[in-house]
Length: 71
Image (tube, rainbow, N blue to C red):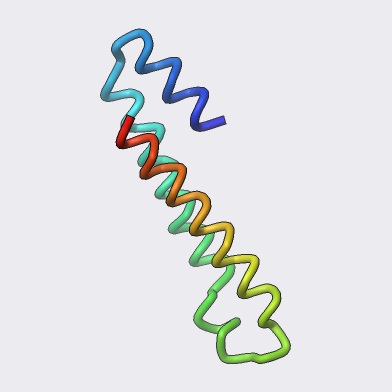
């Protein structure tokens, strides 16, 4: 997905396009936050499992994006 697109663009020296892909991932993370509203999930103890899932997904996605920026 994003990783493959970034690697493909970097291999052809299209750095700006590669960065666009990474920042598209971050924009999607932002949209995911808006959609899942983790602050609301945190207020309801019965939604703790969903909150953990949402936060895990965000941490993973942001980590992937950060690693792509490093490479």
